[in-house]
Amino acid sequence: MLEVANLEVVYNEVILVLRGLSIEVPDGDIVALLGSNGAGKTTTSRAITGLLGVHDGAATKGTVTWKGRDISKDKPSATVANGISQVMEGRRIFAELTIDENLATGAFTNRANEKKNYDRIMALFPVLLERHDQTAGYLSGGEQQMLAIGRAMMAEPELLILDEPSLGLAPLLVQQVRDVILEINAEGTSVLLIEQNAAMALSIANTGYIMETGKIVMDGDAEKLRNDEDVQEFYLGLHTDESGERKSFRDVKHYKRRKRWLS
Image (cartoon, rainbow, N blue to C red; front, side, top):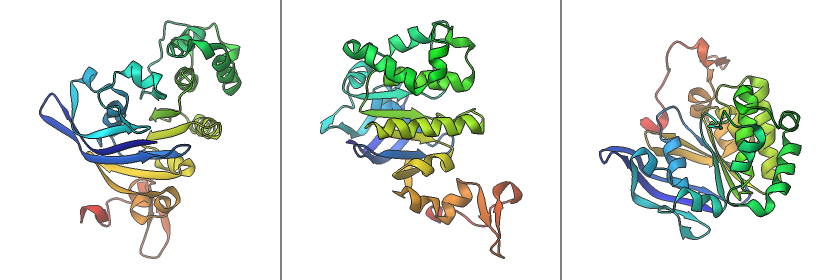
């Protein structure tokens, strides 16, 4: 299990981004971490995977515990070796390398099972098998996202962190990514799904957390969150008018009320 407890993160020694954040990812679950731009979602993933220092950030309070051990001071390579892989926002593939070469970089901590995991990835993403020797920079956005997920899975992680995997993708490709996440989870990998697309994330998650300004403002069972009026209005783009008719948020010119957690 991953446990983040009372975590505070500061950038450049002055900018407080996370303010006592606490989340848990139980073994075998899909957990959704939702929030708008600037809420602190990516900072949370950096704190878990040891990448804060690269961005002049530091955890000043709290702990990040993985399988009972505090990993907040671990190097990123040690985090991967210990069973946590991450797909960063924006995919971050090596555009000048081939698909096969990109996948090989993901296996640097697990060379013993490289062939087995390669075959697993190609079965999961047949389109990558068809183009395995093609330069990755020529892939479509959806194919690059598949490659990024495949590269992370080459390390055979116990926990996969996905940061905005649906960003910039067409609805059909978002559905494909959703199905892949479910398949990966069904094979035993826990997933921390960091998303702005609340509808997609809550449709497959067991538990959800909603972040605003560096802290958790709501959490609970994913189905419960999907049915919450605030979540529907402010994150799912749904609004019920005085007559009880449900409208899309784009049909509403202004908020009818403040979020209850801000009252």
